Image (cartoon, rainbow, N blue to C red):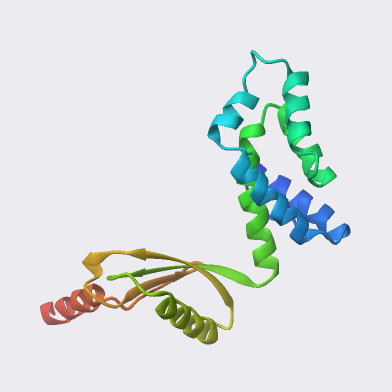
Length: 176
Protein backbone atom coordinates (compact mmCIF):
# COMPACT_ATOMS: atom_id res chain seq x y z
CA UNK A 1 0.00 0.00 0.00
CA UNK A 2 3.01 2.27 -0.28
CA UNK A 3 2.15 5.67 -1.67
CA UNK A 4 4.64 8.12 -3.02
CA UNK A 5 4.97 11.34 -1.12
CA UNK A 6 6.48 13.14 1.76
CA UNK A 7 8.37 11.88 4.77
CA UNK A 8 5.31 12.52 6.89
CA UNK A 9 3.20 10.27 4.66
CA UNK A 10 5.80 7.48 4.81
CA UNK A 11 5.82 7.60 8.61
CA UNK A 12 2.00 7.61 8.60
CA UNK A 13 1.90 4.60 6.27
CA UNK A 14 4.24 2.67 8.56
CA UNK A 15 2.12 3.51 11.60
CA UNK A 16 -1.04 2.49 9.76
CA UNK A 17 0.51 -0.91 8.99
CA UNK A 18 1.33 -1.36 12.68
CA UNK A 19 -2.14 -0.19 13.73
CA UNK A 20 -3.76 -2.57 11.25
CA UNK A 21 -1.68 -5.50 12.51
CA UNK A 22 -2.70 -4.62 16.08
CA UNK A 23 -6.34 -3.96 15.03
CA UNK A 24 -5.99 -0.51 16.60
CA UNK A 25 -6.54 1.95 13.73
CA UNK A 26 -9.13 3.96 15.66
CA UNK A 27 -7.04 3.97 18.84
CA UNK A 28 -4.04 5.27 16.89
CA UNK A 29 -6.21 7.90 15.16
CA UNK A 30 -7.51 9.15 18.52
CA UNK A 31 -3.98 9.21 19.93
CA UNK A 32 -2.64 11.14 16.93
CA UNK A 33 -5.43 13.69 17.28
CA UNK A 34 -4.86 14.18 21.02
CA UNK A 35 -1.12 14.54 20.53
CA UNK A 36 -1.45 16.80 17.50
CA UNK A 37 -3.43 19.23 19.61
CA UNK A 38 -1.16 18.87 22.64
CA UNK A 39 2.06 19.30 20.67
CA UNK A 40 1.46 22.82 19.45
CA UNK A 41 4.08 25.07 17.88
CA UNK A 42 5.46 26.24 21.22
CA UNK A 43 5.85 22.71 22.60
CA UNK A 44 7.51 21.53 19.38
CA UNK A 45 9.87 24.50 19.55
CA UNK A 46 10.83 23.50 23.09
CA UNK A 47 11.36 19.89 22.03
CA UNK A 48 13.68 21.07 19.25
CA UNK A 49 15.73 23.26 21.59
CA UNK A 50 19.34 22.04 21.37
CA UNK A 51 20.05 23.83 24.64
CA UNK A 52 18.11 21.10 26.43
CA UNK A 53 19.75 17.70 26.55
CA UNK A 54 18.18 15.09 24.27
CA UNK A 55 17.70 12.74 27.25
CA UNK A 56 15.71 15.42 29.08
CA UNK A 57 13.52 16.10 26.03
CA UNK A 58 12.96 12.37 25.51
CA UNK A 59 12.09 11.86 29.19
CA UNK A 60 9.61 14.75 29.04
CA UNK A 61 7.82 13.46 25.97
CA UNK A 62 7.72 9.87 27.24
CA UNK A 63 6.25 11.02 30.56
CA UNK A 64 3.66 13.17 28.82
CA UNK A 65 2.60 10.34 26.48
CA UNK A 66 2.60 7.47 28.98
CA UNK A 67 -0.93 6.35 28.09
CA UNK A 68 -0.48 6.44 24.33
CA UNK A 69 0.18 3.41 22.08
CA UNK A 70 3.74 2.13 22.24
CA UNK A 71 4.29 2.55 18.48
CA UNK A 72 3.37 6.24 18.61
CA UNK A 73 5.59 6.78 21.63
CA UNK A 74 8.43 5.08 19.74
CA UNK A 75 7.77 7.30 16.74
CA UNK A 76 8.05 10.40 18.92
CA UNK A 77 11.36 9.13 20.35
CA UNK A 78 12.68 8.45 16.85
CA UNK A 79 11.60 11.89 15.62
CA UNK A 80 13.35 13.50 18.60
CA UNK A 81 16.58 11.57 17.96
CA UNK A 82 16.57 12.43 14.27
CA UNK A 83 15.66 16.07 14.99
CA UNK A 84 12.44 15.71 12.99
CA UNK A 85 9.88 16.24 15.75
CA UNK A 86 8.45 19.19 13.79
CA UNK A 87 7.03 16.60 11.34
CA UNK A 88 4.67 15.17 13.95
CA UNK A 89 1.60 17.31 13.14
CA UNK A 90 1.97 16.48 9.44
CA UNK A 91 2.28 12.77 10.25
CA UNK A 92 -0.92 12.97 12.33
CA UNK A 93 -2.81 14.60 9.45
CA UNK A 94 -1.39 12.12 6.92
CA UNK A 95 -2.45 9.20 9.16
CA UNK A 96 -6.01 10.55 9.39
CA UNK A 97 -6.08 10.99 5.59
CA UNK A 98 -4.94 7.40 5.04
CA UNK A 99 -7.56 6.02 7.45
CA UNK A 100 -10.29 8.04 5.75
CA UNK A 101 -9.16 6.97 2.28
CA UNK A 102 -9.18 3.33 3.38
CA UNK A 103 -12.74 3.81 4.69
CA UNK A 104 -13.81 5.31 1.35
CA UNK A 105 -14.21 8.83 2.72
CA UNK A 106 -13.25 11.73 0.47
CA UNK A 107 -12.66 15.34 1.41
CA UNK A 108 -14.98 17.95 0.05
CA UNK A 109 -14.89 21.73 0.21
CA UNK A 110 -18.17 23.52 -0.31
CA UNK A 111 -18.16 27.26 -0.85
CA UNK A 112 -21.45 29.15 -0.86
CA UNK A 113 -22.44 32.80 -1.17
CA UNK A 114 -24.14 32.75 2.24
CA UNK A 115 -23.71 30.79 5.43
CA UNK A 116 -25.66 27.53 5.44
CA UNK A 117 -27.56 26.25 8.46
CA UNK A 118 -26.65 22.89 9.94
CA UNK A 119 -29.68 21.28 8.32
CA UNK A 120 -28.83 22.80 4.90
CA UNK A 121 -25.27 21.50 5.21
CA UNK A 122 -26.47 18.00 6.05
CA UNK A 123 -28.93 18.02 3.14
CA UNK A 124 -26.31 19.22 0.67
CA UNK A 125 -23.70 16.71 1.82
CA UNK A 126 -26.32 13.93 1.68
CA UNK A 127 -27.20 14.83 -1.92
CA UNK A 128 -23.53 14.93 -2.89
CA UNK A 129 -22.91 11.55 -1.24
CA UNK A 130 -25.83 9.98 -3.10
CA UNK A 131 -24.73 11.41 -6.45
CA UNK A 132 -21.04 10.54 -6.01
CA UNK A 133 -21.54 7.20 -4.26
CA UNK A 134 -18.89 8.20 -1.71
CA UNK A 135 -18.86 9.25 1.91
CA UNK A 136 -17.83 12.92 2.07
CA UNK A 137 -16.15 14.80 4.91
CA UNK A 138 -16.97 18.36 4.00
CA UNK A 139 -15.62 21.69 5.09
CA UNK A 140 -17.61 24.82 4.38
CA UNK A 141 -16.63 28.35 3.41
CA UNK A 142 -18.47 31.51 2.45
CA UNK A 143 -17.52 33.65 -0.55
CA UNK A 144 -20.02 36.45 -1.15
CA UNK A 145 -18.59 37.09 -4.62
CA UNK A 146 -20.33 33.89 -5.81
CA UNK A 147 -23.61 35.86 -5.60
CA UNK A 148 -25.61 32.62 -5.28
CA UNK A 149 -25.27 28.88 -5.71
CA UNK A 150 -22.17 26.95 -4.69
CA UNK A 151 -18.75 25.68 -5.69
CA UNK A 152 -18.07 22.09 -4.66
CA UNK A 153 -14.58 20.59 -4.69
CA UNK A 154 -14.53 16.81 -4.09
CA UNK A 155 -11.07 15.39 -4.46
CA UNK A 156 -9.74 16.80 -7.72
CA UNK A 157 -13.21 17.43 -9.20
CA UNK A 158 -14.68 20.94 -9.14
CA UNK A 159 -18.37 21.64 -9.71
CA UNK A 160 -19.05 25.35 -10.00
CA UNK A 161 -22.79 26.03 -10.01
CA UNK A 162 -22.42 29.53 -8.62
CA UNK A 163 -24.36 32.41 -10.10
CA UNK A 164 -21.02 34.13 -10.74
CA UNK A 165 -19.87 31.21 -12.94
CA UNK A 166 -23.21 31.09 -14.75
CA UNK A 167 -23.02 34.80 -15.50
CA UNK A 168 -19.43 34.43 -16.76
CA UNK A 169 -20.55 31.59 -19.06
CA UNK A 170 -23.45 33.71 -20.37
CA UNK A 171 -21.03 36.56 -21.02
CA UNK A 172 -18.74 34.23 -23.02
CA UNK A 173 -21.70 32.95 -25.05
CA UNK A 174 -22.92 36.47 -25.83
CA UNK A 175 -19.41 37.57 -26.84
CA UNK A 176 -19.28 34.98 -29.66
